[in-house]
Length: 168
Image 1 (cartoon, one colour):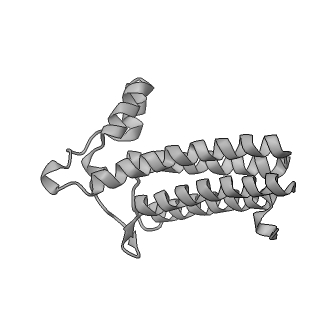
Image 2 (tube, rainbow, N blue to C red; image 1 turned 180 degrees about the horizontal axis):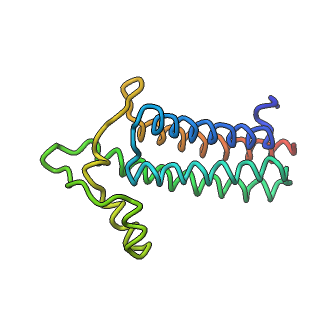
């Protein structure tokens, strides 16, 4: 089996990829002044969760059952990230007359509302989440995050399944 498809190496690469993606998002925010909307912030949190679990998995180097536990946690965070990114993409593709008004900032909401209400407000969306501020190869940032979440989730499951099948 190729080295990249060994679970420990794969989990380490996932952790590095997530760190790189967060680094890129921070670069866009602080160097190019592309402020993240609340959905962007939640997508960053999903990448942080995936990266943290993957790093622990790489350091732990568990056996077959532990690999599935880590793969399940990575997949759970990946599915959550895909859901957030899908909602963001939906908002970005609304006709202009259906785009909701801009809402309160995330920091203000966290300071003044219970967390359950903050989640409801964020996922309802606002006008700032509908604005496409960056594209690469005709895909917006939420589209790229969706691709990354899906790729990481699917390949993690495949790597763990193959490793357990070949008893690596």
